[in-house]
Every structure is written in C-alpha cells, then in structure tokens.
Length: 349
Image (cartoon, rainbow, N blue to C red; front, side, top):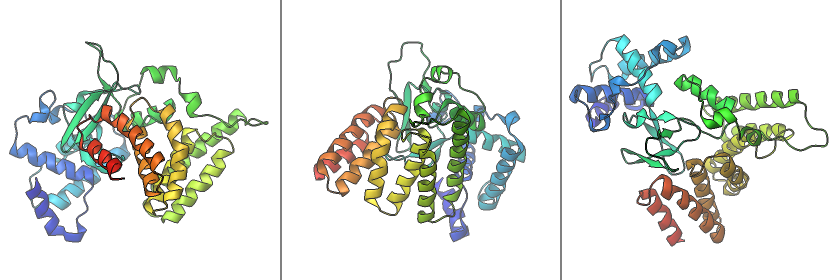
C-alpha cells in the first residue's frame, strides 16, 4: 500500500491532493488485486458484499462519485489498474455508506477506513456498543447490558441533535429512517430544543423560524471554515449565539453547536481562556443530551482538563481529566494507549 501511494505522491509532489475517499478506494482496489481472497477483517462480510444503495443515489451524489472516479484516474492511473466505470461507481457508493471516520481522543479527525465485519452492525440512536480505534484495529465495546440474542447496535451519527435532524442526516447519508425508541418516543427533543423562559414567550412560528435560522447558520459555518479567517469564523459564532439566545436556552443543541465551533476557533488561535469559557458552558448539557459513556462527553472533559492544566488550575484539571478517564475506560478499554497518556499527564502535573 505504501509503495502505491509513495510512487504517486512523488510523481505529483505538491500537487498531490486526492480526497480521503479516493485514497481509501485506491487502497481497497490495490488490496483486492494483491489479496483476492477474504482478509482477516472480512470473516463475516466482504467488501464486495457491502450495501451500495445505488438505486437511491440522486444526481448530485452520482456527480460527486464521478468526480471521485476522475480523481482516482488522475492521481493513480500510472500505478494501478481499474475495473470499469460502473464497477467503480458501485465501489465508491459502498465506501461512502460503510466507511468509518477515525478520530483521536479529542475527536479530532485523523482519517477514514473500512472495517467490513464492524460495518455489519445496524444503527440506533440508543446504541448499546461504541466503536473505538487502536492503531489499525477497530474495537467494539458494550456500554449497556446486552442480553443473549439481543441485537448489537452502534450509532452512525452524532447523537446530540433532535430526532428530525438525526433522521435527515441518516436519510441523506445512509438512506433509512431510524425507528429506535428515542426516535419513536422523542423523549429528549424538548430538552434539546429548550426555549428561554421569558415574560413574553416566543410564538410557535418564531421558534420554528429560529430553528430554521439555526440550521442555516450551521451549514453556513461549515462552508465558511474552508475560506474565512479565524476572526471571521468567531464573529459568525458570536452573532448567531446572540441571535439564537433571544429565543433558545444555552442548553439548546443549536446553541451548543455554535459554542463548540467557537471553542474550536479559540483553541486554534490559542485563546485558552476563551476556549475554556465555551467549554464550561457546553459540558453539563452535553452530559444530559448524549447517551452514557459518550465519546463526545469524554472528549469535552479531556479538553477542559487540559485547558485547566494549561491555565494552572490543577484541582479543576485533575477532576476533569479523571471524568474523561472514567468514560474512556469503558469506551476504549483500560489498556488503551490514550488512557495511559492521560494518566501520565496527571502524574506530570
């Protein structure tokens, strides 16, 4: 695999920029040629057996796949052989539906991968397992009691958001609507969409309009990250928080989303105090909105702990890091290198 990419990277130099999906697909094709038989990670399900949902792809998604195919040919054509275009469309669709995002202990993006046997698990917004990563391995651990014969469920998406938003994401990326208990009962939606208590409460229409605004500004920020400066990004966050705060409580998930983005910008520009202020507002609602042993909650405690330590607040840092460890020992396992690293941070301070 290294030889394949090294030759292509040397040929293109600074112009080497295939997407993660293209790189992953190139590796799959190379591996299938070298090892046509099933690999160790395909004991239950082979990559060729992945669901592609080809019949459900709209024109936009098909165009994106054709762009990826063009990039694959552009960057790798001198170094590998390809199946025909129709087979490549299927493979890219399979990778898009079954790929995993690899993240570090603070949920910073590291890359993409496929784990065929792990991809067998169905989705639930009330998952009973969590998938974590150790090197090139995916590990699956229970976070609830699982009875013999009970189905194992993971989550495909970020579970912070209300039912409608979660199912919009599931339909767009995975082509199904979730019917788990949380999506049926919607027990957390009221708290996740909490409205500020005012003497003159906002009308239902005003709330709907603000939810629409919130979804639009989230998308605007996602696009803006590619071309705006940190100060401009922080301004988007602050202005949207001011506007939404007239209707939403601070614990509302749309407020939390923009606080999290603001915290990220502060971390990027090394404004530790600013990052800490946002993190302190986020952590308690996170603990309420997310399921038990959530990696999102663990990563927030970890960020807070490291910020406290950097700002020489040892007692608060110690407490926050220990809360992160308590979650991660269940989700990652007590022997995971991340746990050892955080415990060393505690000892060093």
